[in-house]
Length: 307
Image (cartoon, rainbow, N blue to C red; front, side):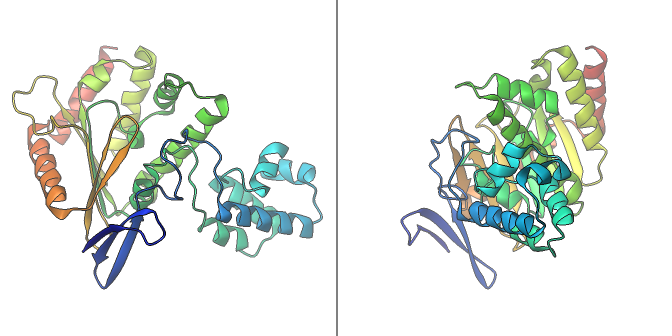
């Protein structure tokens, strides 16, 4: 059963999964306006609550912000922003603060309930949340290398060239969010990741030859993981099932499948099982049309060799 009406005025998709329901707010993980610039500060009660917990334990330890900041290897302004609920704490901050403040696991526990992910477009946050629980995750991309496979120099090239232009803090927030997402590939060894990439996304040489060399090396390294499959769709292909655009599919632990399609300034979450079935059909066909795993690795190495 799918219900698209949220009782609190938000657009919500509620799917019957197993014995219960699974709710997804299409307005974003925190109800943010999809027109808000990526990485912009947003109000979040959970962030403010986390900041108050950090502040309380810091004061209990009789440390000023100036004394506490170097112990967790962050700047004083960053610590202040976290305590004020204006900045999302990175995992290493949580771990260092937990140790320095001897917080009895309270900071780790509070961090699990934070509702905002900085640097992610508001329309993408629900999908990013589902990624952290997925049993299977399939990605076909025809415009650029997908975020989970991007090297840092390649990602930063994309951020620098984004319009409207981003400030330095926004770029750092976007890279931090992307790097955090990429941990899924190694942190979830029981999740099967499948990627189909278009050859032309590498031939474009985004960022130049050096960036592309590093990108290919990065993809080859990830392709060695047992839970990751990378296939290349060759530049010349008479039949292609993915001409309608990018596709993302995932299987939730409840064994429900969901889809996601992203455009320029919006993303469409797909829960209609008929549509999901169609996306599955197209992805399966593309798997047979793309190069095999071994041939894809061979092509990547050849492309790397001519740069």
